[in-house]
Length: 445
Image (cartoon, rainbow, N blue to C red; front, side, top):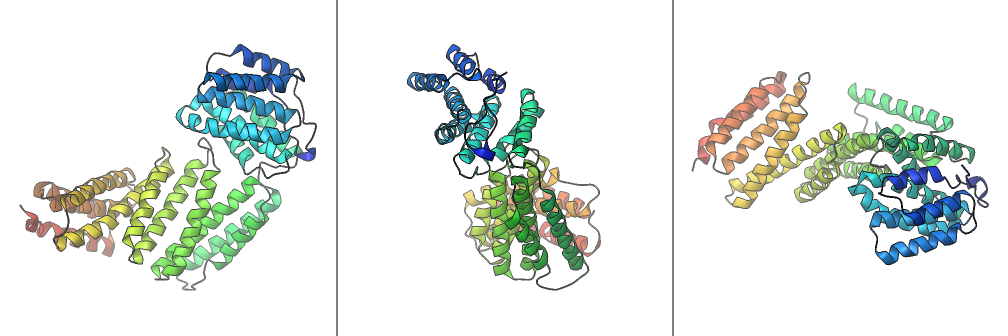
Protein backbone atom coordinates (compact mmCIF):
# COMPACT_ATOMS: atom_id res chain seq x y z
CA UNK A 1 0.00 0.00 0.00
CA UNK A 2 1.48 3.32 -1.04
CA UNK A 3 2.18 5.91 1.64
CA UNK A 4 3.30 9.41 0.73
CA UNK A 5 5.79 11.31 2.79
CA UNK A 6 5.85 15.04 3.20
CA UNK A 7 7.75 17.04 0.60
CA UNK A 8 8.30 19.81 3.12
CA UNK A 9 8.77 20.08 6.86
CA UNK A 10 12.27 18.66 7.46
CA UNK A 11 12.54 16.66 10.67
CA UNK A 12 8.91 17.45 11.54
CA UNK A 13 7.65 15.43 8.59
CA UNK A 14 4.80 13.18 9.64
CA UNK A 15 3.50 9.87 8.31
CA UNK A 16 2.20 9.75 4.78
CA UNK A 17 -1.30 9.13 3.51
CA UNK A 18 -2.48 5.84 5.06
CA UNK A 19 -5.49 4.60 3.12
CA UNK A 20 -5.88 1.53 5.35
CA UNK A 21 -6.57 3.38 8.61
CA UNK A 22 -8.76 5.95 6.84
CA UNK A 23 -10.91 3.18 5.36
CA UNK A 24 -11.11 1.38 8.71
CA UNK A 25 -12.27 4.56 10.42
CA UNK A 26 -14.75 5.35 7.65
CA UNK A 27 -16.28 1.90 7.95
CA UNK A 28 -17.45 2.72 11.49
CA UNK A 29 -19.43 5.73 10.26
CA UNK A 30 -21.79 3.81 7.96
CA UNK A 31 -21.91 2.63 4.33
CA UNK A 32 -18.97 3.78 2.21
CA UNK A 33 -19.60 6.69 -0.17
CA UNK A 34 -18.36 6.00 -3.77
CA UNK A 35 -16.96 9.55 -3.96
CA UNK A 36 -14.83 8.96 -0.87
CA UNK A 37 -13.66 5.60 -2.15
CA UNK A 38 -12.44 7.26 -5.35
CA UNK A 39 -10.72 10.07 -3.44
CA UNK A 40 -8.88 7.56 -1.23
CA UNK A 41 -7.96 5.37 -4.22
CA UNK A 42 -6.45 8.31 -6.13
CA UNK A 43 -4.67 9.62 -3.03
CA UNK A 44 -3.21 6.20 -2.18
CA UNK A 45 -1.64 6.10 -5.67
CA UNK A 46 -0.16 9.56 -5.23
CA UNK A 47 -2.46 11.10 -7.84
CA UNK A 48 -2.07 14.84 -8.25
CA UNK A 49 -5.85 15.24 -8.56
CA UNK A 50 -6.45 13.99 -5.01
CA UNK A 51 -6.65 17.46 -3.34
CA UNK A 52 -9.06 18.65 -6.04
CA UNK A 53 -11.26 15.55 -5.68
CA UNK A 54 -11.25 15.87 -1.89
CA UNK A 55 -12.27 19.53 -2.09
CA UNK A 56 -15.12 18.71 -4.48
CA UNK A 57 -16.33 15.90 -2.21
CA UNK A 58 -16.21 18.23 0.80
CA UNK A 59 -18.23 20.87 -1.08
CA UNK A 60 -20.89 18.26 -1.89
CA UNK A 61 -21.07 17.23 1.76
CA UNK A 62 -21.63 20.84 2.78
CA UNK A 63 -24.21 21.45 0.05
CA UNK A 64 -26.21 18.32 0.94
CA UNK A 65 -26.20 19.13 4.63
CA UNK A 66 -24.90 15.68 5.49
CA UNK A 67 -24.47 14.71 9.14
CA UNK A 68 -21.69 16.27 11.21
CA UNK A 69 -19.73 13.02 11.48
CA UNK A 70 -19.60 12.58 7.69
CA UNK A 71 -18.75 16.26 7.18
CA UNK A 72 -15.99 15.94 9.78
CA UNK A 73 -14.61 12.88 7.99
CA UNK A 74 -14.58 14.74 4.65
CA UNK A 75 -12.62 17.56 6.33
CA UNK A 76 -10.23 14.97 7.82
CA UNK A 77 -9.71 13.38 4.41
CA UNK A 78 -8.94 16.76 2.87
CA UNK A 79 -6.53 17.62 5.70
CA UNK A 80 -4.71 14.28 5.41
CA UNK A 81 -4.23 14.70 1.67
CA UNK A 82 -2.96 18.28 2.01
CA UNK A 83 -0.65 17.17 4.81
CA UNK A 84 0.85 14.37 2.75
CA UNK A 85 1.19 16.67 -0.29
CA UNK A 86 3.39 19.03 1.71
CA UNK A 87 0.86 21.82 2.23
CA UNK A 88 0.76 22.01 6.05
CA UNK A 89 -0.77 25.49 6.32
CA UNK A 90 -3.81 24.52 4.27
CA UNK A 91 -3.93 21.23 6.15
CA UNK A 92 -4.09 23.12 9.49
CA UNK A 93 -7.32 24.85 8.43
CA UNK A 94 -9.00 21.64 7.26
CA UNK A 95 -7.84 19.58 10.26
CA UNK A 96 -8.83 22.26 12.79
CA UNK A 97 -12.35 22.36 11.36
CA UNK A 98 -12.43 18.55 11.35
CA UNK A 99 -11.51 18.46 15.05
CA UNK A 100 -14.18 21.00 15.98
CA UNK A 101 -16.80 19.21 13.87
CA UNK A 102 -15.99 15.71 15.14
CA UNK A 103 -15.47 16.50 18.82
CA UNK A 104 -19.17 16.73 19.83
CA UNK A 105 -19.95 13.69 17.67
CA UNK A 106 -17.22 11.66 19.38
CA UNK A 107 -18.63 12.54 22.80
CA UNK A 108 -22.02 11.13 21.79
CA UNK A 109 -20.93 8.21 19.59
CA UNK A 110 -17.86 6.00 20.25
CA UNK A 111 -17.79 4.99 16.56
CA UNK A 112 -16.62 8.54 15.73
CA UNK A 113 -13.63 8.40 18.09
CA UNK A 114 -11.33 6.91 15.44
CA UNK A 115 -11.97 9.75 13.01
CA UNK A 116 -11.53 12.25 15.85
CA UNK A 117 -8.17 10.71 16.82
CA UNK A 118 -6.92 10.96 13.23
CA UNK A 119 -8.13 14.57 13.01
CA UNK A 120 -6.23 15.48 16.18
CA UNK A 121 -3.10 13.77 14.85
CA UNK A 122 -3.43 15.51 11.49
CA UNK A 123 -3.87 18.91 13.16
CA UNK A 124 -0.84 18.47 15.40
CA UNK A 125 1.38 17.30 12.52
CA UNK A 126 0.15 20.06 10.23
CA UNK A 127 0.91 22.69 12.86
CA UNK A 128 4.43 21.31 13.23
CA UNK A 129 4.91 21.40 9.47
CA UNK A 130 3.76 25.03 9.45
CA UNK A 131 6.35 25.90 12.09
CA UNK A 132 3.83 26.05 14.96
CA UNK A 133 3.60 24.17 18.26
CA UNK A 134 1.43 21.06 18.03
CA UNK A 135 -0.44 22.15 21.22
CA UNK A 136 -0.49 18.59 22.55
CA UNK A 137 -2.80 17.37 19.77
CA UNK A 138 -0.46 14.54 18.73
CA UNK A 139 -0.16 13.30 22.31
CA UNK A 140 -3.94 13.32 22.70
CA UNK A 141 -4.31 11.44 19.42
CA UNK A 142 -1.81 8.74 20.43
CA UNK A 143 -3.57 8.29 23.78
CA UNK A 144 -6.85 7.84 21.95
CA UNK A 145 -5.33 5.31 19.57
CA UNK A 146 -4.20 3.15 22.50
CA UNK A 147 -7.72 3.18 23.90
CA UNK A 148 -9.25 2.40 20.51
CA UNK A 149 -6.90 -0.54 20.00
CA UNK A 150 -7.98 -1.91 23.38
CA UNK A 151 -11.65 -1.35 22.69
CA UNK A 152 -12.30 -3.21 19.48
CA UNK A 153 -10.60 -1.24 16.69
CA UNK A 154 -7.60 -3.51 15.92
CA UNK A 155 -6.45 -1.37 12.97
CA UNK A 156 -5.21 1.17 15.51
CA UNK A 157 -2.75 -1.27 17.07
CA UNK A 158 -0.47 -1.25 14.03
CA UNK A 159 -1.20 2.40 13.26
CA UNK A 160 -0.27 3.49 16.79
CA UNK A 161 2.99 1.51 16.68
CA UNK A 162 3.88 3.08 13.35
CA UNK A 163 3.08 6.57 14.61
CA UNK A 164 5.20 6.10 17.73
CA UNK A 165 8.10 4.97 15.55
CA UNK A 166 7.73 8.03 13.33
CA UNK A 167 7.61 10.31 16.36
CA UNK A 168 10.87 8.82 17.56
CA UNK A 169 12.58 9.21 14.16
CA UNK A 170 11.50 12.84 13.81
CA UNK A 171 12.63 13.85 17.28
CA UNK A 172 9.18 14.06 18.86
CA UNK A 173 9.47 11.42 21.56
CA UNK A 174 6.25 9.98 22.96
CA UNK A 175 7.82 8.48 26.07
CA UNK A 176 9.56 10.27 28.88
CA UNK A 177 13.21 10.99 28.12
CA UNK A 178 15.82 9.22 30.29
CA UNK A 179 17.24 12.52 31.55
CA UNK A 180 13.82 13.80 32.53
CA UNK A 181 12.94 10.46 34.13
CA UNK A 182 16.03 10.78 36.33
CA UNK A 183 15.03 14.32 37.36
CA UNK A 184 11.51 13.11 38.08
CA UNK A 185 12.84 10.36 40.34
CA UNK A 186 14.92 12.93 42.23
CA UNK A 187 11.88 15.18 42.67
CA UNK A 188 9.80 12.23 43.90
CA UNK A 189 12.49 11.30 46.42
CA UNK A 190 12.55 14.89 47.68
CA UNK A 191 8.77 14.79 48.16
CA UNK A 192 8.98 11.45 49.96
CA UNK A 193 11.64 12.81 52.33
CA UNK A 194 9.53 15.90 53.08
CA UNK A 195 6.50 13.71 53.83
CA UNK A 196 8.59 11.57 56.19
CA UNK A 197 9.76 14.68 58.06
CA UNK A 198 6.16 15.83 58.37
CA UNK A 199 5.03 12.45 59.72
CA UNK A 200 7.90 12.56 62.21
CA UNK A 201 6.45 15.80 63.62
CA UNK A 202 8.75 18.33 62.00
CA UNK A 203 7.03 21.73 62.15
CA UNK A 204 9.14 23.52 59.56
CA UNK A 205 6.67 25.80 57.65
CA UNK A 206 8.43 25.26 54.34
CA UNK A 207 8.76 21.50 54.61
CA UNK A 208 7.61 21.08 50.99
CA UNK A 209 9.68 23.94 49.54
CA UNK A 210 12.42 21.66 48.18
CA UNK A 211 10.16 19.19 46.29
CA UNK A 212 8.07 22.10 44.96
CA UNK A 213 11.24 23.70 43.57
CA UNK A 214 12.35 20.35 42.13
CA UNK A 215 9.08 19.80 40.28
CA UNK A 216 9.06 23.39 39.00
CA UNK A 217 12.54 22.84 37.56
CA UNK A 218 11.36 19.56 36.04
CA UNK A 219 8.42 21.34 34.41
CA UNK A 220 10.69 24.01 32.93
CA UNK A 221 12.99 21.41 31.39
CA UNK A 222 10.25 19.08 30.09
CA UNK A 223 10.85 18.46 26.39
CA UNK A 224 8.07 15.96 25.59
CA UNK A 225 4.37 15.69 26.35
CA UNK A 226 4.85 12.78 28.83
CA UNK A 227 7.65 14.69 30.59
CA UNK A 228 5.45 17.77 30.94
CA UNK A 229 2.46 15.81 32.20
CA UNK A 230 4.58 13.96 34.74
CA UNK A 231 5.98 17.26 36.04
CA UNK A 232 2.56 18.91 36.17
CA UNK A 233 0.99 16.04 38.08
CA UNK A 234 3.92 15.76 40.47
CA UNK A 235 3.92 19.50 41.19
CA UNK A 236 0.13 19.47 41.63
CA UNK A 237 0.35 16.66 44.21
CA UNK A 238 3.02 18.41 46.29
CA UNK A 239 1.11 21.71 46.14
CA UNK A 240 -2.06 19.89 47.24
CA UNK A 241 -0.28 18.29 50.20
CA UNK A 242 1.40 21.55 51.18
CA UNK A 243 -1.92 23.37 50.87
CA UNK A 244 -3.59 20.94 53.26
CA UNK A 245 -0.79 21.42 55.79
CA UNK A 246 -1.05 25.21 55.49
CA UNK A 247 -4.83 25.01 55.97
CA UNK A 248 -4.29 23.07 59.19
CA UNK A 249 -1.82 25.70 60.37
CA UNK A 250 -4.20 28.57 59.50
CA UNK A 251 -1.88 29.89 56.79
CA UNK A 252 -4.93 30.30 54.59
CA UNK A 253 -3.44 32.76 52.09
CA UNK A 254 -0.60 30.35 51.35
CA UNK A 255 -2.98 27.38 51.28
CA UNK A 256 -5.33 29.02 48.79
CA UNK A 257 -2.48 29.99 46.47
CA UNK A 258 -1.04 26.47 46.42
CA UNK A 259 -4.37 24.67 46.11
CA UNK A 260 -5.54 26.95 43.30
CA UNK A 261 -2.32 26.27 41.40
CA UNK A 262 -2.73 22.53 41.98
CA UNK A 263 -6.26 22.64 40.56
CA UNK A 264 -5.16 24.72 37.56
CA UNK A 265 -2.31 22.32 36.73
CA UNK A 266 -4.55 19.26 36.87
CA UNK A 267 -7.32 20.88 34.85
CA UNK A 268 -4.76 21.56 32.14
CA UNK A 269 -3.55 17.95 32.25
CA UNK A 270 -7.15 16.71 32.09
CA UNK A 271 -7.87 18.91 29.07
CA UNK A 272 -4.92 17.26 27.29
CA UNK A 273 -5.85 13.70 28.29
CA UNK A 274 -8.23 11.86 25.98
CA UNK A 275 -11.43 10.26 27.27
CA UNK A 276 -10.02 6.78 26.51
CA UNK A 277 -6.54 7.28 27.96
CA UNK A 278 -5.65 4.75 30.65
CA UNK A 279 -4.45 7.49 33.03
CA UNK A 280 -7.53 9.73 32.72
CA UNK A 281 -9.26 8.22 35.76
CA UNK A 282 -6.15 8.88 37.87
CA UNK A 283 -6.03 12.50 36.72
CA UNK A 284 -9.72 12.99 37.50
CA UNK A 285 -9.17 11.56 40.97
CA UNK A 286 -6.21 13.85 41.61
CA UNK A 287 -8.15 16.86 40.38
CA UNK A 288 -11.13 16.04 42.60
CA UNK A 289 -8.86 15.69 45.62
CA UNK A 290 -7.29 19.09 44.99
CA UNK A 291 -10.68 20.75 44.48
CA UNK A 292 -11.92 19.26 47.77
CA UNK A 293 -8.85 20.70 49.51
CA UNK A 294 -9.49 24.10 47.92
CA UNK A 295 -13.13 23.99 49.05
CA UNK A 296 -12.13 23.27 52.64
CA UNK A 297 -9.54 26.07 52.61
CA UNK A 298 -12.13 28.53 51.30
CA UNK A 299 -14.54 27.39 54.00
CA UNK A 300 -11.85 28.00 56.62
CA UNK A 301 -11.69 31.65 55.52
CA UNK A 302 -15.44 31.93 56.15
CA UNK A 303 -16.35 32.24 52.47
CA UNK A 304 -18.79 29.34 52.42
CA UNK A 305 -20.52 30.48 49.24
CA UNK A 306 -17.25 30.36 47.29
CA UNK A 307 -16.38 27.00 48.85
CA UNK A 308 -19.72 25.46 47.86
CA UNK A 309 -19.43 26.84 44.32
CA UNK A 310 -15.98 25.24 43.92
CA UNK A 311 -17.23 21.91 45.24
CA UNK A 312 -20.26 21.87 42.93
CA UNK A 313 -17.96 22.47 39.97
CA UNK A 314 -15.74 19.65 41.19
CA UNK A 315 -18.68 17.26 41.44
CA UNK A 316 -19.49 17.97 37.80
CA UNK A 317 -15.88 17.33 36.72
CA UNK A 318 -15.60 14.01 38.57
CA UNK A 319 -18.78 12.36 37.35
CA UNK A 320 -16.91 9.71 35.37
CA UNK A 321 -17.14 5.92 35.66
CA UNK A 322 -13.63 5.12 36.94
CA UNK A 323 -12.81 4.11 40.50
CA UNK A 324 -10.66 7.17 41.21
CA UNK A 325 -13.33 9.44 39.76
CA UNK A 326 -16.00 7.84 41.95
CA UNK A 327 -13.88 8.24 45.08
CA UNK A 328 -13.13 11.87 44.29
CA UNK A 329 -16.79 12.52 43.51
CA UNK A 330 -17.74 10.98 46.85
CA UNK A 331 -15.26 13.14 48.75
CA UNK A 332 -16.50 16.29 47.01
CA UNK A 333 -20.15 15.44 47.64
CA UNK A 334 -19.47 14.68 51.31
CA UNK A 335 -17.56 17.95 51.74
CA UNK A 336 -20.34 19.86 49.96
CA UNK A 337 -22.93 18.25 52.24
CA UNK A 338 -20.89 19.09 55.34
CA UNK A 339 -20.58 22.79 54.43
CA UNK A 340 -24.22 23.11 53.35
CA UNK A 341 -25.30 21.39 56.56
CA UNK A 342 -23.30 23.89 58.62
CA UNK A 343 -24.98 26.83 56.90
CA UNK A 344 -28.49 25.36 57.07
CA UNK A 345 -28.12 24.26 60.68
CA UNK A 346 -27.34 27.84 61.66
CA UNK A 347 -30.33 29.11 59.69
CA UNK A 348 -32.57 26.51 61.34
CA UNK A 349 -31.34 27.73 64.72
CA UNK A 350 -32.36 31.29 63.83
CA UNK A 351 -35.69 30.13 62.39
CA UNK A 352 -35.00 31.52 58.91
CA UNK A 353 -34.53 28.32 56.85
CA UNK A 354 -37.16 27.96 54.13
CA UNK A 355 -38.73 24.60 53.07
CA UNK A 356 -36.97 24.55 49.69
CA UNK A 357 -33.59 24.92 51.36
CA UNK A 358 -34.40 22.08 53.77
CA UNK A 359 -35.48 19.73 50.97
CA UNK A 360 -32.28 20.51 49.03
CA UNK A 361 -30.21 19.67 52.12
CA UNK A 362 -32.07 16.36 52.51
CA UNK A 363 -31.29 15.37 48.91
CA UNK A 364 -27.65 16.45 49.20
CA UNK A 365 -27.00 14.60 52.45
CA UNK A 366 -28.64 11.48 51.01
CA UNK A 367 -26.23 11.62 48.02
CA UNK A 368 -23.34 12.05 50.43
CA UNK A 369 -24.39 8.93 52.37
CA UNK A 370 -24.62 6.87 49.18
CA UNK A 371 -21.21 8.09 48.01
CA UNK A 372 -19.59 7.44 51.41
CA UNK A 373 -21.09 3.95 51.64
CA UNK A 374 -19.65 3.14 48.23
CA UNK A 375 -16.17 3.95 49.57
CA UNK A 376 -16.51 1.98 52.81
CA UNK A 377 -13.42 -0.14 53.51
CA UNK A 378 -13.87 -2.84 56.20
CA UNK A 379 -10.17 -2.61 56.98
CA UNK A 380 -10.12 1.16 57.46
CA UNK A 381 -11.94 2.54 60.55
CA UNK A 382 -11.56 6.04 59.10
CA UNK A 383 -14.10 5.23 56.41
CA UNK A 384 -16.59 4.18 59.11
CA UNK A 385 -16.08 7.55 60.79
CA UNK A 386 -16.79 9.32 57.49
CA UNK A 387 -19.93 7.24 56.97
CA UNK A 388 -21.17 7.88 60.52
CA UNK A 389 -20.67 11.63 60.04
CA UNK A 390 -22.54 11.55 56.70
CA UNK A 391 -25.40 9.49 58.17
CA UNK A 392 -25.67 11.81 61.16
CA UNK A 393 -26.04 14.81 58.85
CA UNK A 394 -28.63 12.92 56.80
CA UNK A 395 -30.52 12.06 59.99
CA UNK A 396 -30.47 15.69 61.10
CA UNK A 397 -31.71 16.79 57.67
CA UNK A 398 -34.72 14.49 58.18
CA UNK A 399 -35.33 16.15 61.55
CA UNK A 400 -35.08 19.63 60.02
CA UNK A 401 -37.79 18.53 57.57
CA UNK A 402 -40.03 17.34 60.41
CA UNK A 403 -39.59 13.56 59.85
CA UNK A 404 -38.77 12.44 63.38
CA UNK A 405 -38.94 8.68 62.76
CA UNK A 406 -36.62 8.73 59.72
CA UNK A 407 -34.21 11.07 61.49
CA UNK A 408 -33.94 8.88 64.59
CA UNK A 409 -33.51 5.72 62.49
CA UNK A 410 -30.64 7.28 60.57
CA UNK A 411 -28.97 8.56 63.75
CA UNK A 412 -29.07 5.01 65.12
CA UNK A 413 -27.37 3.76 61.94
CA UNK A 414 -24.75 6.48 62.35
CA UNK A 415 -24.17 5.42 65.95
CA UNK A 416 -23.74 1.78 64.92
CA UNK A 417 -21.04 2.72 62.41
CA UNK A 418 -19.39 5.05 64.92
CA UNK A 419 -19.01 2.05 67.28
CA UNK A 420 -16.40 0.67 64.85
CA UNK A 421 -14.20 3.78 65.20
CA UNK A 422 -11.53 3.29 67.91
CA UNK A 423 -9.91 5.69 70.35
CA UNK A 424 -10.76 9.28 71.23
CA UNK A 425 -12.04 9.97 67.75
CA UNK A 426 -14.67 7.27 68.14
CA UNK A 427 -15.65 8.43 71.62
CA UNK A 428 -16.09 12.04 70.47
CA UNK A 429 -18.10 10.94 67.41
CA UNK A 430 -20.44 8.72 69.47
CA UNK A 431 -20.94 11.48 72.06
CA UNK A 432 -22.00 13.99 69.40
CA UNK A 433 -24.40 11.57 67.68
CA UNK A 434 -26.02 10.55 71.01
CA UNK A 435 -26.51 14.22 71.90
CA UNK A 436 -28.36 14.82 68.62
CA UNK A 437 -30.43 11.65 69.08
CA UNK A 438 -31.37 12.41 72.68
CA UNK A 439 -32.55 15.95 71.84
CA UNK A 440 -34.34 15.05 68.59
CA UNK A 441 -37.71 15.62 70.22
CA UNK A 442 -37.28 19.38 69.77
CA UNK A 443 -37.97 18.87 66.06
CA UNK A 444 -41.27 17.02 66.61
CA UNK A 445 -44.16 18.65 64.69
